[in-house]
Length: 574
Image 1 (cartoon, rainbow, N blue to C red):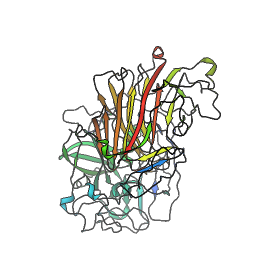
Image 2: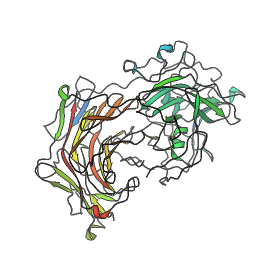
Image 3: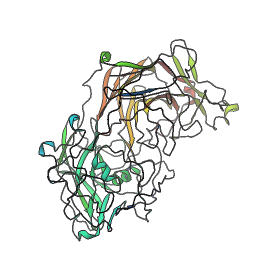
Image 4: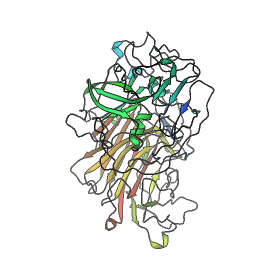
């Protein structure tokens, strides 16, 4: 099920539903400094996005350390088999990059310690030639000063400076203690809250937002963030301008989770059609098009700051690339030609186990390798050339053992056996048909204390026979509300072929490279995203058959048994 809300001047809600679950709050203590973080328990949720396959919470999994050699920046980890090859060393974590004009660039350095508040960049900031939101490949190591501040009217003795989460109803003060893994300086400076309060500034409008930085972009959407403004009291809203026209206002709205995320992280997506209404004429960005963005801050007295320096950002355009595997080496190959699931390559349970229900799913994943498994059904059927993950109605005598779930199904993950950073990953499969049959193939990082990225290579609701979905998810390091950070997702992108994807085998693949992800169906590019928020962390390969969840159509029991039939799963790296 999708949730929509009008964005811009008309903030009335469309019909929707939020998953109501409890918040996970991190009560962190930090170093002694003049900056404090204020937050409060609000009526949000720690739910998983309908497109997510990973639950929130501190569920950890022991991952293998990548085997590394000098090379192209890719890494591969393999455990339990001699058949695979190791890759090469991971790319070093990039130094944050700051964009903007000479007098409006983002500040450098984290907001921690005494006298540390947001300001403007030093006068030796990048020249106007670099004032674009699209970060070039040769600039990922950054060129911003990482230690000095000289923001006008924004310095303080530290004692009166507080970074406010600006939630009504109280505060729970604390400080972050974990490492900030944000890829940009702008995002790092936005982690403490949506504005900086400096009582020494005196009355007047807030400071202008600075450091606008593109995080991700697709064909018809762009996500960016900015450094929070400073005010003597509070900032109550940020106005978003595109090509000089006001298109939306970011405010705190406790009734809508995605408004909270935008506000808390001073970020915005133009235009998130999965979560907001983007149907107005000329509202949605166009593929392969550049737009100029700026942001203004509004305080509690209605005083409006100057607009930030305008930054040009571009959408992507799909259909421009094919992959020649001659320049790649194969690092994983599963042809499913045997008679049982290969224990040296696969696990049959997700890291949180079969009994935790996520996304309102109604199947029970039978862990055929589990030492305590008492469900005597094997969903993995081998034909000699293919493997079927087969879902059925739960027999009554197995219902209690199956956590009272009405359906049984299976999942395969390479967790603890194989992971990779960057590469080309492909599955050839015939997808399950029928309402509520949700075939999925994705990459997932199981380190729940990091940014937990997920690349959904293919998701498909059996009721929409010719359509496959592609989505990207990540969590930032903002722990003001949750120890997991704030969840961000691309819009749910979809590709319709006019062909019933259950009638025959098709290939579903992704090219994952630094700062870009490209999706393919039958070798043809269908979607792409680009930006600094593309994961550089190792991920596992997962495929499964979900039966019913809160996002897709209802389950038609007459469609069972149903199966995803897989010919192969393979991975290559340069």
